Each structure stands twice: as C-alpha cells, then as structure tokens.
Image (tube, one colour):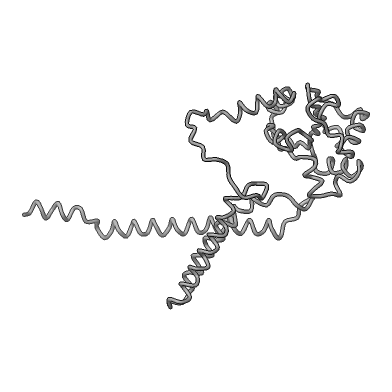
Length: 257
C-alpha cells in the first residue's frame, strides 16, 4: 500500500510546478501579444503615415500586420462582450460569416475567376521541377543567356519588360520583374509617352528593360508603341549597353541615372 500511494502521488504535478507552467504560459501569451501588436502597429504606420515615391503597388504584404490585428482584436472583443448568451452568439455568427466569406477567396484564381487546378498527387515529381521547367522555357524562348546573366548578379535587380505568355515567362527570371502592360494598366501616365516612360525608369531606378529581338519569330511587342519607341531611343543612347540573346535583348539602364 505504501508503494502504491507513493507512485500515485508522484504522478500528480506539484503546486509549484503548476504555477511555473502557468507562469510560462502567461508570459508566452504576453510575448506573442506584444509581438503581434507591434507588427500590427508597424503595418498601420506604413499604411497611413508613410509616403512612397509612387502610389499603387501590391498590398499583400500588409497581411503580416492585419492578421495579428484581427486575432488580437477578436480576442479583446470576446473578453469585453457581456456575459449574456445573445451578444456572444451574435458575435460568433458574425465571425463565422466573416471566415466563410474570406475563405471563399481560396477558390478564385489570380485572374479573379472561380476554380482551382486539379488535385495533384504526383509524388514522383521532383521538387526542382520549377527550375527545370524554367530552364526549358528559357531555352525555347531564346532567353537562357539573359537568365544566366541575371542569376549571377550579386543582388536582385528590377526589370520592366515585354515577354511572351503575358508576364509568365518574365516572372520566372531571377529578378523582380514587371510587365510593361501591367505598369500602363495601373499607372497610365507612366507609359503614355516616351518621355514619361523614361522618367519613370529613372525615378524608380529600374535596372533593366527587356524586350524581344526585332526578328523574334515567336513573339514581338510591336503593338506597344511607346515601348518600342523607347527601345529605339535607347539604341541611340551611348550610355546604355545591351545584352543580346537569341530571342530577347536586355538593356542596362544604369547609365541613365
């Protein structure tokens, strides 16, 4: 009996150990709350108090602050709600509707059309397939030499260009790439004339301009008049150098600054 009691008592955590555990848990929650609150505060400062050279851009990076703000705000609202069942039930219904509506975006493609790609259980595919597929597409498009040049630079560069497959080919390049037509769609005043486009390249410190070779049989950008007129101007500029590949030309714009 003595042995049984001693083993049973040994399995029960001591009050001191429980206090240390709950103290650690409380400190962890406080630390997480402080970090999340700081991240949310920094995000709101960037959103409302920070000026940028150009308006616009992708706001997905604000999610890093909005997510902890939503979580902390939800926890605070639940704590401040009255103890009655009706307001708490209404709060849960509203939260469920919010989650359901937001999660529905998971079934929208980047082109804002419903649907997702087929379920993929190909476990034999290599994790390096994207790299291999990109290399194959670069070879087929005649841009492999330019891709290799950008890959061996010591820093990530900014590239504005016009490539086949909309911006899909350019997005595979080892650089921060933006499609010329997308720039014009977001800020038409940047691409409505050669002077405005060149000023945009200078002011935003764009490193390179990528366009197809004039005799590229697969793709051309002749419908982008301002872009091709800018290319003609760059060809006459002694401060601009060009790297020519089989299908594309990469213009180094560092001489314009």
